[in-house]
Amino acid sequence: MGNFFSNALKDLFSGKIFMLAMVPIIIAALLWGVIFWLAGGWIGGLIDSLISHIPYIGSWHWFQNSISKIGGLFLYGELLIITSVMLAGIVADKLVELINNKHYHNKMLGFGTLAGSIAVSLKQNIIYILLVMFLFPTFFIPIAGYLIHIILWYILIKKPLMYDSAALYATKDEYEKLLHLDHIKTMLLTLLSAAMFLLPVIGSFIYIFQLLVFAHYNLSRLAKIRK
Image (cartoon, rainbow, N blue to C red; front, top):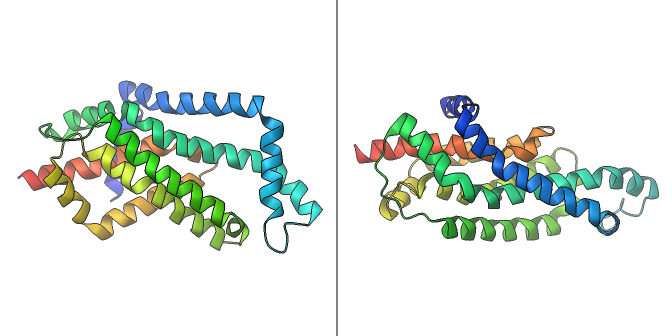
């Protein structure tokens, strides 16, 4: 499994792939940067309101003051993640094509479209946002909060990563096979990818790297299926 990550890391820093990878990151960072600049006061009030609903400790003023200071950065990071998942569809086809042509040489027989990518990502984003709003107080439980968040990220990224990395080349039948083959391996790879969101600073921008990892994973499996 480690070779998928190492190959993705090598490819990420090749010229054309790196430039494409920066597109959704730059768009997401600028978009939310402007919104936070224009609506900072309202966003701060929203964060304070969410904190106040945390059971037992939400009414502690010292807790509210300390958490609200980093709450903006937390929210900004979360919004970068979910926006990157949405915007990745813009460059996903080209990134996967570059990976395939460089390493696997599968014939392009897929059913995937940009509209399909957006639909899959939008559905998972809505599910993720609703779960985050419901489970937000649990994020402050030591250790368990991190585990809960990783599971939520798992839910957010699994289907978009599978679709964006495979649907361009795999037929619908082949795609179904990829979904059901190596189920445990796919789950572990997704969990490892989700845990990468915890990395300081770069975690918010890591989705494109995760896409490259899954491109190697699914394109290599597709080549084996066709053989």
